[in-house]
Image 1 (cartoon, protein in one colour):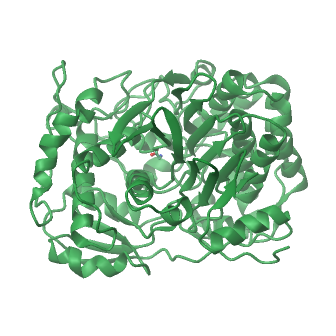
Image 2 (image 1 turned 30 degrees about the vertical axis):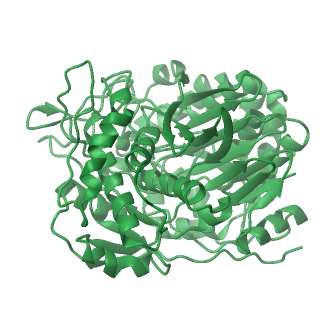
Image 3 (image 1 turned 90 degrees about the vertical axis):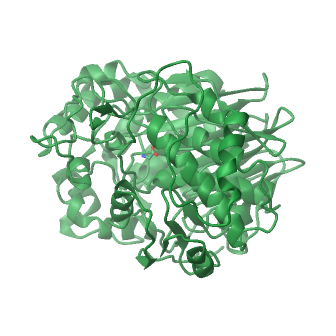
Length: 602
Ligand code: GLY
C-alpha cells in the first residue's frame, strides 16, 4: 500500500514576461481577474486507500495510462473514482456511476462542484448508437433584471463584489441532471448510488491537501458567511490536510434525496433553506422557491464538428464549449501541425485559431432559448475555410474580430464582457455495456458564492453572464435575463470515429477549458499521445491575444519564440483537470497530474 502519494506542485503566480500592443480592454480585465484567485494545483496525499487506487496513482506518477477491458472511470478525487468504480464493477451503467461520483465529489471536492451547482453531460448510448446531451445548467431567477451586476449608475460591479453572497446564485441544476441521467439510463437503485456519500459524510473524510490549500487561500471570503466559515474554518482556523471533516448536513441532504428523490431538493425544507440563504445574505439575491420548483433539465442534440476523420461532439449552447472547440479544430483542419507542440509556428496556428474562435464566441454565443445563435454557420466548413485564410501569414494576427457566419436571422450583438475564473471538475466514464458519459460539473468560482446551506455550497454561476447588457446601445447576447442560462465554456466531449466513440475528454478551467480540451484532442489525434501523455502535456493557451504558457514546463521555453512572432506572453500556473478515456481494443484512462484525480478500470 502506498503510504504517501505526491502530485507535482505547480505554483500559483502569474508573471508577465512581455507586453504586446494588441490586447483589448476586456482581455486585460480577464487577465487581471484570472490572477486573483485561480483554483490552483496542490500537492496530493492520500493514505490508506485500496491497492487499486494506489496502483492508479502509481501509473499516473509514471506517466502511464491505466488500461482496462470492461469499464473505466476518471475523475478528480480518488473517493469519487472509487464510488463510481464500485457501481461499474457490479454492472451499473455509466449513468449510475456518474450519480455516485457526483454525490461524492460534492463532499470531498466541494469547492469545485456539487448539489448547489450545474453540469453538462454528453452521453453515448451503446444500445441505440446515439449521442445526446443533458443541459443541467443553472438558470437566472425569474425576478432578475439586466442590471443584476451593475451599480445604481449602471457601472458593472467588481467581480468578487458580484460573486460573494446571494446575488450570483442561479437555480441549481446538478441534482436534476443526476436524476434525469439515472431515470433515462440507469439500472441500479437510486438510493444505493447515494449511500456511500451519506456514509462518508457521517464518518468523515480526510481533507485533501488541495482542499486545505484552497481553504487557506480563500479564508477571507469564506469568512463572509457564518455557516461556510464554521464548516471550513472550525474555531476560526482553516482545516488542514489530513484533518477528518464530517458533514452531517450533507449526509441528511443526500439521504433525503435518496429517500424521496430529487423533489426533496427542489421543494420543501431544503428549497426553503436555499432561498433563505440567498435572500438573507448581505449581498442578497432574488432566487425564489418558484425558481427551484420549475427547474428542468433540457435534453439537447449533441453538437458535432468534423476533424481529421473524426467527429468531435459536445455541448452546444448555452455552452460555448463544443462550438469553440469545433471552430478551433475546423480552422486547423488543413493546417500542418506535424512539427508538434515545441514548434512556434504550430503554436501560432493553434493560438490564432483559438483567438478567432473566441471572437465569434464573445459576439454570438448565449442561451439559444433566448437569443438566436448562428450555430450551423459557425461550424460550416466553408465559413471556417474562409476564415482560416487569416492564418496564412507568418506572425501573430495583429487584431482579431468576430466573423460573419451565415444565418437566416438579423444579428446585431455587441461583444460579451464576462469573466470566468478556473474552477469546476470533469468526469469521464465508460461502462461494460459500452455507454460513455462525459460530464463537466461546476459551482463556477472556487467555493462558488461562498454561501453554504444544508452541507453544500451554492454556485455563483450568474456571473458567467455579461455584467453589461449593452455596449453603445447594442445588446449583448449573453446579457442577464429571467430564466436564461448563462453562457458556459464547459466542453464535455466524446470523439467519434465511424459512428463509434473513441475518446471521452473534458476539463475544468474557466474559459481556458476550451484550449485545454482542444489541445488534448490535438495531442491525442494528431501527435499520437496516449491519454495520460495528452493530459500531462504542458499548456500553451491563447484566448484573447496574449499567450499563457505553463510555468516550469517546456511550454514556457517557447516564450522567446512566441514573442518573436508578436505575442504578449504570460507564464503562470495552468491548472487544468483533464480526465480522459480512449476507447479501442482496450480502455485507457488518463488523469491530469495537476490535480488529485485518477483513472480506475477493470
Ligand atoms: N463557470 C464555468 C463555466 O461554465 O464555464
